[in-house]
Length: 169
Image 1 (cartoon, helix red, strand yellow):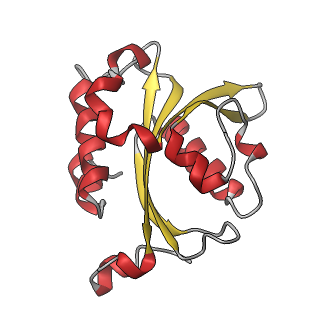
Image 2: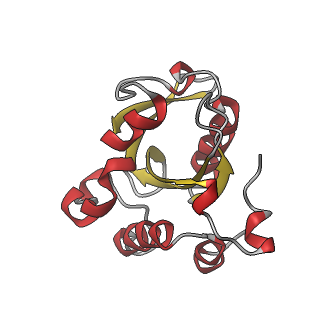
């Protein structure tokens, strides 16, 4: 199991770390923060690519629906995704990948972070650096996920060999 510090050190961009640090500051006594603990004004520089996903358990499997998607995500998906389910994202969005990531966050009650190349048509020159952070209504059960994404042109990414290996195609 990865501790919070180990996960933070795996994050490549300072923006990922800043959003993660903010989320950690809202964890009190080992409990997950609630949606009410998150103050959008404290995340102002990151809001364009912040998302909130509702976790819906239908008894068989979790489904995920965007309660909120920042305006910067419109540019990536070429449409508004607020209100959309994960399964409604356009082809190339790696829906199966995101389903696995989000289900892992729910099952473990722990954040997850990473980086990958975009597979969306016309966007394959973009690297996506992301973090997904669990929120709860009772401090334990994940009921919502706070997401942050940073999109960078691959030509602008200067990474070491080890960091480059963290961006799967």
